[in-house]
Image (cartoon, rainbow, N blue to C red; front, top):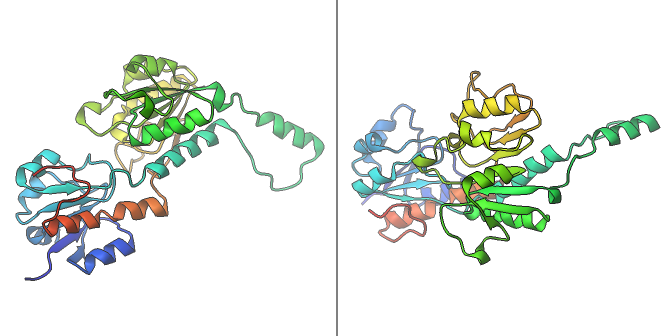
Amino acid sequence: MGKPLVIQTEELDSAPAAWLAERCELVRCGAADKGYDLLLAGAEALVIRTYTRVDQAMLAGAPKLRVVGRAGVGLDNVDLEACGARGVQVVYTPDANSEAVVEYVWTMLTDALRPHRYLTNAPDARGWGETRKALRAARELNQMTLGILGLGRIGKRMARVGTALGMRVLYHDLLSIASELRAGAEPVGFEELLRSADILTVHVDGRPANRHLLNERAFALLKPDAVFVNAARGFLVDNSACAAFFASHPAARALLDVHDPEPFGPSYPLLGLPNIRLSPHLAAATTRAQENMSWVVRDVWRVLQGEAPHFSATTP
């Protein structure tokens, strides 16, 4: 028998891709590329990232498909119910980028809260003093309350860092979490979290019920000088409500790394507001995290070999 056909629709690191290519017939072809539908009809596996949609319509054109490998954490672009009904396993890398995301969130926060300027020439005494005065930070992190919405893998790491910095750390989660697993964070209700947080960072999953979780009512509960961070999923935020809140609260700040849609166009409501900083989905953009996510190919191969994967999101 020949090697199983595997379609790679988005970027993978070279070493994991080469590893899989030694074992399978690996073809790089985007979902919008010419010939994709023909390849899909014979494919036994699909390796995707963020922007390939796996739904019932796609599965209808993939009668031989046995496994979908999501090189990443979120499964918002994969219809798990449809895959399970078809007997298609979905494997992913749930903890591949957690450290990178936490690092990036704290990078955004410290950059926003500690104004800085690098000197390119030697200032005179007056310029030196004026610069130091102008760049004085209003507060230290240990004077602030960190609110974490979702105390999962990333949320717990955020709590650990916040606690280490001397912050008061609050969280809200749908699950009951044992005190020894909270990294010093205190559980509170959703509305109390929004009212109390000086910094609100969002780390919830992609279930449909979380769409526009941060809506007009939620933003209205925030402090007028709150810092809001989203490095989880763009669709958690109602863009119009977000824009309205930050337009009317100039002392508040938003640091947004994920967006709905991605990439966004010139009509994106959050463009042009001076207290909203937008970055192009960079939280997991480290060499190590990208490689970790790309090694989803190992579980893809396990399924093709009839073995149990290490990280499955479905039970066919």
